[in-house]
Image (cartoon, rainbow, N blue to C red; front, side, top):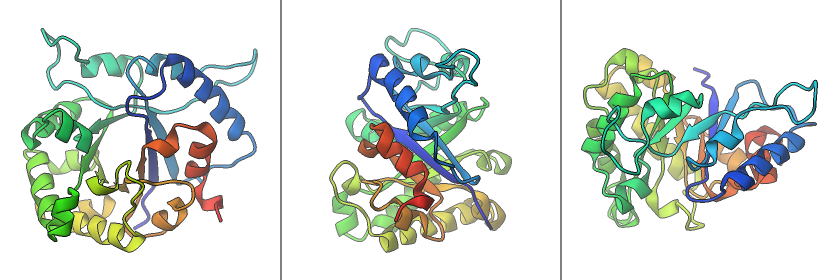
Length: 262
């Protein structure tokens, strides 16, 4: 089955409103003479304060607006209430966001998000029109102990609890080995393929093989223009969740036009 590729740049706590607005200008310039493949989708997950400054608009009178799909890095699973500092799904929906990152390893490790919390966020996200991007992956010690598949199965089973078959078709998965995030280390294409293929078998066990064949599964972990084409060439890898290499418009343009990279 031919699945679309999805490349999302995750800025984390980088690039405020001024940098975000400039990025929009710069990316438009970078893509003027580049044709993105028809089967490639992309988005930027910017900090909350930057998102309104990246909503598509025209920089020249009479010119069609440049539209950059956007994603949220986090949100609260409750609809509203006394949750100081949190952001609701309705607030994000009002900005016209397309994607929602859920369960990123930094949220799990630094902010104590458990599989139960990740599951609550996923179920809440499925009530919206936005697409959830569910991240999962093992630590370096788990990798060294050959527990990659055990961790993947446990995280997916817990995080996808109570998700219905028709809902699973709306979810994107993102395999991110924690030992490869921001470390400069990258899983080899073969390692990434093996882990992503295993995740697909877990989805088949939890739902069915048809859904498993359709689900988009990204790879994340030190993806950059130099290695993106080889990673995207793997049978089961359907895109990338990219950190540092997405902060610069020129670099991000190379990522989303990976088919043209040497």
